[in-house]
Image (tube, rainbow, N blue to C red):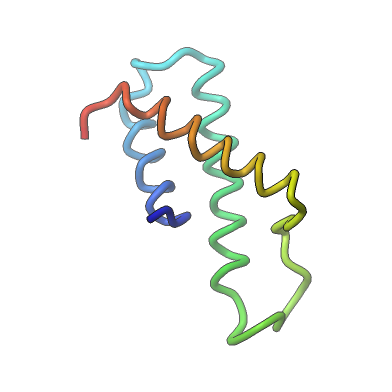
Length: 83
C-alpha cells in the first residue's frame, strides 16, 4: 500500500546514493520529495475533516492520474538502488 511517508523514505534512501542518477533525475526526485512533504502535511493536519486551511491536494481526476503517474515513475526510477 502506498503512503506518502513510505515514498518519502524511498526517495531519501535513493538520494543518499545520488551518484547513480543524472542531474535531471535528481531534480525530479527532489521536487517529488517537496511535494510529498506537502501531501503528508495536508493528510495529518487538523483533527478531522477540513479543520484548518484549504488543502494543497488537488482532487480532480487529472490531478489524481498525474499523482499516480508520479508514484509509478518514482518507484521505477528507484529500482536502480538496492535497498
